[in-house]
Image 1 (cartoon, rainbow, N blue to C red):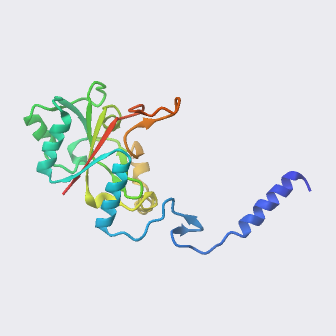
Image 2 (cartoon, one colour; image 1 turned 90 degrees about the vertical axis):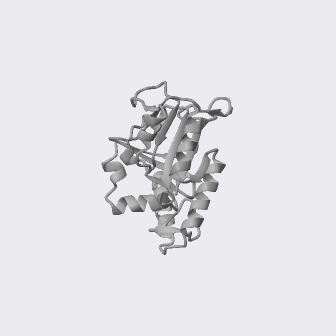
Image 3 (cartoon, rainbow, N blue to C red; image 1 turned 30 degrees about the vertical axis):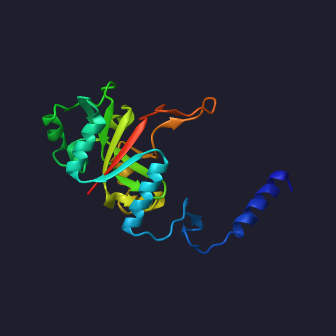
Length: 216
């Protein structure tokens, strides 16, 4: 028997001994969730998402739409243009008109000089404090990638337990985030890297700031 055969036999034997039953936190077939969670109600799920997002360096707000407009203007800090998703992809009807009434225009998606971007979110993941962003018509990727400051608008009912829950919802709907979106990303906190000399640098591959507005 060759060394290759001995290695393959050991792998087959190990696989045969793997438990077949589903354990707590399993997804079936012996696959475990990345971050097993207890059963969560809607309020606990939202609280967990908020804690995890803040731990990553996000700024999280929960407010009415009227308060949100004031907060957005504060975050614009005098800027007169934004990159933005189309209104039908934002949980805030009439936002663009309100911004225009305050002399703030929506810039072309390829304008790299704009400092603030506004997007919605397809989902939020409580276990990791992440946002799921699907891009496509009316949802330019540039709005969440080019500006230094990213403002994400969402509602509490968009918060799911974890990545596996989102994947299961996608499977049930025949994977729209992959078949009907041009790009789908999981955003976990502001952009940062420590690849060079182990020195933390923010904004290397995207926004330095991520502000999440949860609208009531």
